Length: 341
Length: 263
Image 1 (cartoon, each protein chain N blue to C red):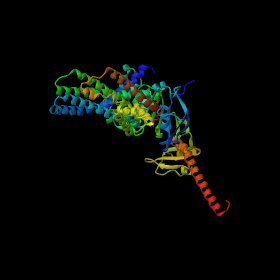
Image 2 (image 1 turned 45 degrees about the vertical axis):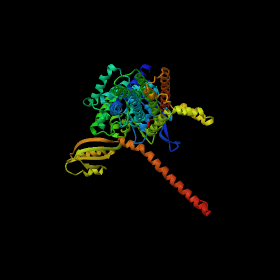
Image 3 (image 1 turned 30 degrees about the horizontal axis):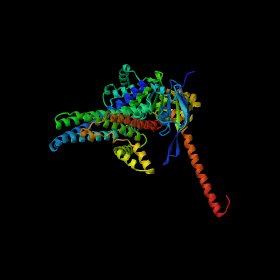
Image 4 (image 1 turned 120 degrees about the horizontal axis):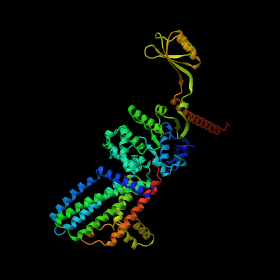
């Protein structure tokens, strides 16, 4: 049986807050999640959802209040785990007195890469993230995008089996984001497991095999991207060239919502049940069909759906509190007047 | 993880700490020190008769000690807290590095910086000594012993700064460490007071006298300035004392840091 890359077993974290540090604040509710080897797994959630807390728990940077996790079949506290994982923190900051080459060499030393291999490996990583020309410059002179690349290089320097990336695309320009996406794709091809947190859904949709949605420290949903986005909305989208700047009335009569693109190109969305009838209309009117595609649910829709229950629940809670308060006020007023409610 | 690998990792962290201090221009204080000492030597040469050596040794070694203590406190309090604030620690601790290795590595990095610093400042003292006395005398060898004791003081100060910074803010850590340095320099007086006091007050004074670092015993500047020898037994005792005290403070820092959540 294949070993799961990450097995999170009811990992929970709360912090003590307040002046006397006696009030517990839950940062992560008991989380149970399994990530298989070779998967690219996206951990989605809005800011403050608990993504970074989960990553810090797995990295041993903070300690769980309860629960545990197994990484590559070993207990998360096992020192051997660290040799096989790579980590890129959110908005990484490195020793700015070092050059990119010195920093990678230092991390190579700490990771136990033998000295004979180390310098070749460092140069290889610098080339891989496109920093060979800037390798001798101190990091204090690096831009945010360049620091992110250094961060990626240090995370994969020691050829780890499992890579954790915390918001790897955050703050990057479109070119930088594309480079990071390409790198994650390469890691997938090399058979690495990638666990990355993000709130940029388009990146998750294009990269991940599976995603989990977390909100307010609670896991809201998990599933394969292909399955989550496969459900059609019961609608199809037809793109065609009209003969003039006018949508055939027969098509509108089928319930199509149409809009013109460039020139005479029309984009119509209509119920799936009417698709054959719509094609007949196009044939009859001698209009050129460009494409017909089912309207799929996007990851964004799934994500918002997962977050909504919480918002609805909050509204419900607030409403019930309000009602309870009103009832109490009525009771008090009634008791003052000596009338039962 | 075997001990060779552990030792190597501590060495890498120590070297990186040393390199950071050098590149942050910490050793620039040497220039200020050199200027101060040359100026003082010329001045002393002008105004003192027969006591030039005494004044230069006193002035030089006191300056070495104060410069070093200030560096030890101000770098020591930020050794770990700066790495947490800047989050540079995250990428270090996500590697096969244990927390205690990190703390010990940082300690050795800073003490290494201070040893190099002291070496160059000591050269300055000896040059000033040659300038005013025109020659070396056999008793000047005891200046080396005094310098060695100053380095031992740095070990304790670094360890204390690291200990306080493991649970309090940098400002409070600096205040605590400096306060202990001052009290530690008065520890002989404190012990004398404890001896003549009885009852609860005496017990408290005795406890405090033995708890604070005994920097008085590590201060032989006045003695060597007068050309008095430093007994071998004192060198041995002071070495053992400084190493033990530093080890205890570092162990305390490690114990606290091991349990700390890096938020």
